[in-house]
Structures are given as C-alpha cells and as structure tokens.
Length: 454
Image 1 (cartoon, one colour):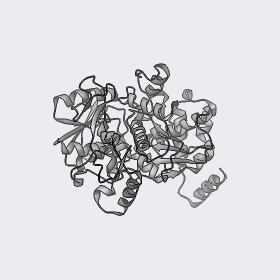
Image 2 (image 1 turned 180 degrees about the vertical axis):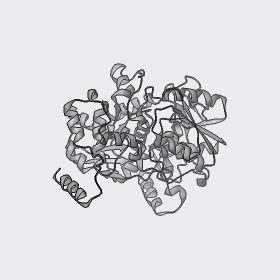
Image 3 (image 1 turned 180 degrees about the horizontal axis):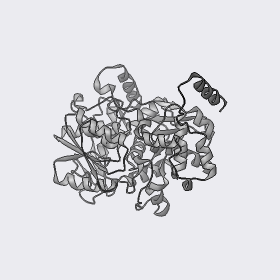
Image 4 (image 1 turned 90 degrees about the vertical axis):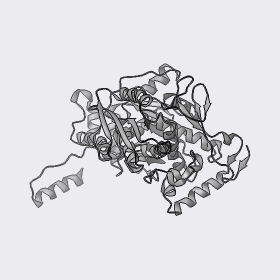
C-alpha cells in the first residue's frame, strides 16, 4: 500500500452497512441501512489506495499537545486525521474531552498477580464518562447538519454527555430514560445541562425503540451509539492509549459490555491503527458483562455470534443494564478479529472489584469494575498470562453512582440470602463504613489506634 504525506491524504468518508456492505454518502435519520435495516459504520476508502505516513501522524499529534487551539486541546480532535473531516476546525463542539490518564494499578496487580496492570480511566472526561469522546464528534455533525434538537435513550451517562454537548453547541436536548432505573447522580447532570428529560415506564431497550420511531417523525437528531459518528469519536480512546504506551501495544485490553458501542469503537480503532502501520500487532480485546445483563455472552456461547440472544437485564451496574445491545454484531466482529473473548461476572464479584479499584485511590462506577473481576476469571482460565500487559478500560467516574458505594460500605448492598459466608468475609475486609463517635479527642485517638491495627 503506497504511503502519502498527511497533507496529501485528505480525509474522505462513506457509510457502509455492517451486514450487506452497501455504501452511501449519506445516512438516514435512523442511521440504518436503507436496504437491509442493519447498522452503519464509517469507513475511509482512500486508505485502500494510499495511507497517511504513520511516523508523520505520530509527530503531528504530539506537536499539537503544545498548542492552545481549542481543537488541539481536545483529546479527540487532536487525532482528526483519522476522523470525519471538518471544513472549519472552529466548528468542533468541544469541552476538552479525552486526555484521560493511564494509571498503574499496584494494589490490583498484587491481588491478580499481573505486575503490568493499568487502567485507562475514561471517567476523567468532562461529564465523568467515556461518552464525551463520542459525543463531541456526533454533536458537531448534528450542528453542522442544522439540527436544533438532539435526543438519546440512556441509562444515565449518555444523557449527561449529550445534554452537556448540546448546551455547548447551542442546541436543545431530549432525554428518554427508564423510570427508576438510573442513578440520580447521572440524571441530575442532564437536568442541570438543560435537557428535557422524560422518565418512561419501560427499560432502556424500550426507550431506544421509541427513540428510533421518534427520529423518523420529528426533526430530532439521534445521538445514541447507533449513530456511527459517536463511535468515530470513541475510537480515539485506543489511539490515545497507544500513544501513552509509546505505541507498544498491550497484550490485552479489557472493556465493560453494555450496548457494546464502546467496545466496538475500541476494536475498530485497533484494526485501523494496525492497517495504517501505527502499531505492529493487535492487542486482544475482551468484553466483560454482568451475569444479569449477559446478552453478548449468551449470543457467543449459544448462537455462536450469529444471532442475538436478548435478555431481561438486571444488575446494580446501571450503565450496562442493557438486554438488547444495538452494536452486538460490531462487538462480535472486533472480538473475533483481535482474538479476544467475552466473559461474565456476578454482582458480588463486580462489587469486590469496585472496592479494590477504589483502594487504589482512583475509583470507578460499578460497570467499570467488571473489567477487574473479569480479568481474574480470564487468568484462572489461562487466557491471560501473569507476565502479560493488561489495560482495563474504566468507563465512568466513582461519583456516577454514590448509592452503590454507600450501600456497599454500609453492608446493605446484598441481602443475606444473596451472598455466601466466604464472599461476605471478602467484602467485609474491604468495607470502610463511617464511624459515629462522641466529639472527644480520646474517642478519635482510640479509633485511630484500632485502624492502625487492622
């Protein structure tokens, strides 16, 4: 494949159906194929004829860290050579998203026996979740298309992100959420950012079905991960990660699985970087789900990835409480293409893992913790080796679901019949409930001394 300079390789893109392969220059309101009704993805046909020079790209991206331009301060648009192009860079709707830290996890490394264990913490984005990296691109193209209203169905994080970027871009936002099934912390963000918020008497999948009908009847732009612009932004997580690792790919990347847009985006990015010569080998991308919301696990095990096995989703990890994931086909493709696997973990396992990540001083929302819990299982199965390098993708901030954290530390997360004695002992060792004392110096000192012994 010929290599061209970055200036010569102007980015063009097309929409391609993931099922029938139909190509088009525009997408319909529902972002589905006009022939077979399946999802679309964005491709860059010119890469087949000539690819941008990898070394030049790396140099340009690094140099942009030293500029003060708004588009370069974004950890998404800084990689714009691999994104749908903007005629004017000032059109980007940005909140300086991306630029998230890669943390070493020494405590979790000792627990798992994997010395080279890291966390890419997407919870450090402006609204506290990975959604921002996709929303900056999708909101930008919504505004360029002239839409005044944008909308999403959400378990919480998408609504917070969409509302923020809509407000930043001078648009109005409509949020559809399942009543009583999302964290109030996430919902409060959407309210504060000015969204019209509708709590529907259904689950997330019901909200998404209604949204798909709505966009066909009203001048509203859909910003769920069905929208392929979202996934283009979210794929920069992997580009930034590899840059942080000096372009030395880890052996494994482990991500949570909900609606499966994020894992699909990470996998798409890995495959594109390999195609463009930015990396010399592919990490294995694995996806972890909660046992109570394990549609992808069952799809791979029972239907061999050929048809979706939907479930009635139930888990305290609200961000991945999804039983009919829209991007399941994309996820199956990237898992198989990178040699990864899909595993599930119990509520007790994810709660323990969340507390262990919290003990590192960084914390995460419950859904993110399935990655560490899943790693333990993959080690036991021999799929991950102790000497390998592993990166966990933490998708949300610890403050996204404080009720879960408070219930855990107060010992109220599980009923007695939901947990056995061994698991209860393991969780008890991690709990740090608040201690009520008399307001005396002696009482505080005694508590300090007791804590020192523990």
